[in-house]
Image (cartoon, rainbow, N blue to C red):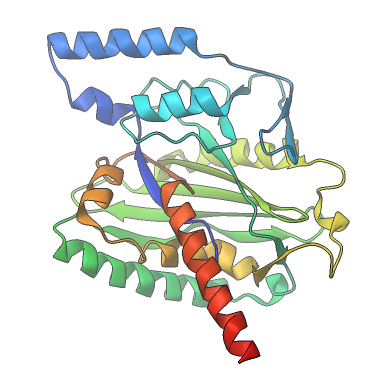
Length: 304
């Protein structure tokens, strides 16, 4: 399966966009609303059990966590549609969810099944990047036809790296959105589990890589599956298989964006170009349905 059930891309506005939409008295009202939301958020620290029941965080000093409900409220404050299905949000030390220069990491659990990592050691990431650039170019042509902003995949800001022992994968992409001078950093972490993948996604500015990278490396260390749900707990023939490997985790999101081209839908998702968070939300649900149907069709053909 070349593009199966990988995380799709949903671009969500960050706080700066909300502020840019108001001025004068409107800005004062918006600022008051943000401060009120900030005061009501229920931050957590220390040991965190994620809603999926299969993964956990061991937050060191300075890191904070918001549950799915509060994360949804923050994402909506940033100008996004309701997003109640996340696993929450991690806020690194010194960052704030209501400030334009703040950044956070949104968590998602994808339960597509066990991802086979046999291809990890043999992946040519330069060739994979070339494929992803071609997919992005194809998508941009469609977006241009629809009158929407485009996004160019410039290259790796951090080449993909897979730790065979911990079963953790990370990479960062350098993106440039049309009409913008500053490049966007999309930093992604994937942790492979028994029957799913824990996703950590953050987007900041490329020039912030020196700040984001060490924080994401720390998150690699304190985020993991619980006993019984780890990669080593997989039981062949008993547990579900995803039907794809590590390469798809890296490339799948770029390919999946080609599926949805509704002008109205993308206009909402891509309202902001400077600051984005890349997470699997509404599109992921559609993508899973489409893939399930494809798998069903394939199984029917095999038995025909």
